[in-house]
Image (cartoon, rainbow, N blue to C red):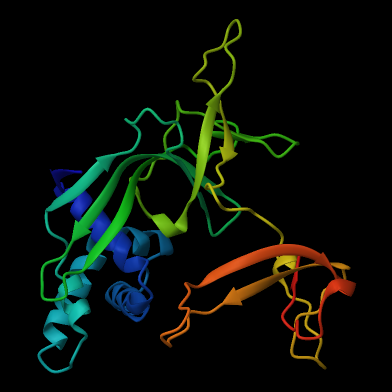
Length: 273
């Protein structure tokens, strides 16, 4: 990772983004909206959002600093509202050889956002807590259907790298996005390979997606065990480390597939395959 410096625009956008995504600051967001409506009763929702983008972080900082003279705030909050350090650590995203630097963010409406990671940033805050946060800085594609995005009847989503999202809102938390891969279509006459990219979701290695029903255990209310409707069951045998001074063994697990009629009465914990 290399050291980089936040620009003034990125500094304000990043701090505002982190505040708006922190549940502890939700009451202050409502207070800011009420403050703006009291200041200008005719203000509309779009103007409140513009004011929030430009002034919310500084307003919360001034409010907390002033209120801390009377009330007690958590140390992390006092450090956080001061803003991050200008210098941060970063590694490249899009410049790497791998093609799996795409991200997808599900919007609050039916609109999903697709983009490319440009930087993976480790941002630090001054103070006794040593608050740190990792964020992705992304370049987002346009969300207008037919221009920046198109959806096939089969469910495949294409994005156009020629069109970018108009609003400058590049930051996202790693836990709020999914990893995707963008695959250019084969070039044919009269088209360019960069006209449209097909989007496919990347499932991390070692992770298997399944439906919610498959994760729900079938519990018999009359027995303290998990009951499986299938005759084929999987069970675990644990050998626990003995604290005494004879034949001490390490903890390990054994796996075996057996049928229900092979189980001994002592087997009480069953896990459905």
